[in-house]
Every structure is written in structure tokens, then in C-alpha cells.
Image (cartoon, rainbow, N blue to C red; front, side, top):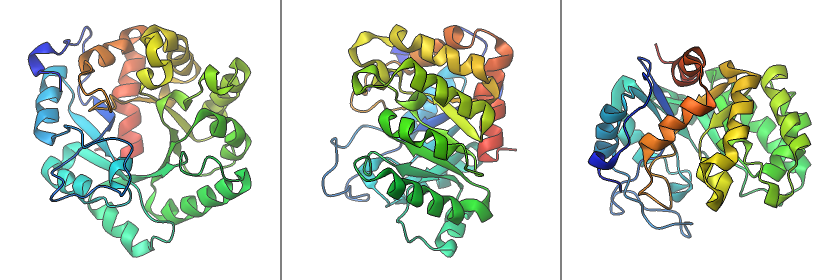
Length: 283
């Protein structure tokens, strides 16, 4: 974990009420057991450290996203939400047969979205994936939640027509995850952008290192800029802290990418404050 003294400070005036819309929290394995075969070892992701980081970066709100490390056991996140109080909300992962009573209980504890891990279903028939999304959208409709998609770009491409029919708001993580090495094209990306203006789609400006790999953040700058230029009122920013698997990344450097991606302060206000407030129900 990068020491706080080493964090790059904001190079712009971070607006009041700014929100990190994508971070994860981890706790002791003795209290929060992981799934049988996690994709990574237990990260150093303690809530106290993140709160100190927020002070340095002038962030006031945040969204805890349930990591695959814990599967559908949301206890670590829910315990963190108790500590966080009104400055945080959560996005949960649940079993396919989750009941309305279970969802209502999660709502009372600060959950405002449902994370669908489509990497796990990426090799299934597209009709089966669509049926799963439709079923989960129906479950959350009474609560006014949104869906959050953690999904490979090739599946995003195959779902674009279907996603345009969803009536629930939905967020696609990591700028759509459309990587050229996976066969995605500029035409595919342009179709994705139309979802921002023609449906209830939000794109998350997060995980540039996931998309760029070892090519550097500049390799995805044109993607982020295009998202903002298409509709800044449908973009949100997330640090993806603690930056699995490289927890030494500089979160301040990631925040400052917004100066290039969204040079207009009014757009940064939407991305960091207005849009998260709307999606997650901050007052």
C-alpha cells in the first residue's frame, strides 16, 4: 500500500461532495472468509487507511463495491457501511434466488445497486445472460436500485442491443472493458457510447490500468474523453482502490487523470458529485 505521504495531491479544485464511486474493503480472514478459489490473495484494504486517503484527496463520499473475493457474502462490506454512516453506499452481490425480503434488508443497510459478475457467465449463451439480467432487474425494480456490470468487452458488445431495452439504470465498469486485444473495434465502442444517450446507461471512468495493461494511462485517454464528451451526465469516477493486484498504485494520480479526461470543471462536478448523488441516493 502506497504511504499517504507518497500520494499525489489533487491538481484541480475537487468539488464539495466528491465521491469515489468504486472502491473495495477487505478485512481479517478470521472474520470474513473468502470464496474457495479466489483470483488473488487477501489485499491490504482497510477502511481506516481509505478514510485517511480521502482526506488527502478531498473526497467526501464513496461507494463500496462487493469484490469477487467474498462472492455473495456481503458481511465485510455491510460492516464497513456501519462505520461509514451516511458518507457511503454499497453495491452488493447476491445469489440468483435472492428474496425480496433479503434485498429490502440490504437496502436498509445502505445498498443501492446490484453487481452482476458477467465474467463468470461470459461463456454461456447470450440469451441465457440476457435472461439472468432481466430477472435481476425485476428483483431490484421496487427498490429503485441500479445494476452494475462487471463484464468483458466482448460480452458488452454482444449485449448492446439488449441493454438499450432495460428500464432500470445500469453502470458498466471500467469504461466498458473494450480492449483491442480481445477483438473489440472502434465501431463497437461507438455503439457503446450510443447507450449513454439512448438508454439508461452510465459508464464508469475507472480501472484505466485494467484496460491499458502495460501501455500506460495515456493509451485509454481517448476512450475516457469520448465518454465525457458524449454525455458527462452519464459518467462517474471510481479509483478501484486498493488497486488489485498492485496496491502500490497512486490513487491521487488516478484522480488527476480527470483534468485531462474532463477539462471542464462543470463536467467534473457532474462526474464526481451530481451523477453519484443521483445513482446512489445521497442527499
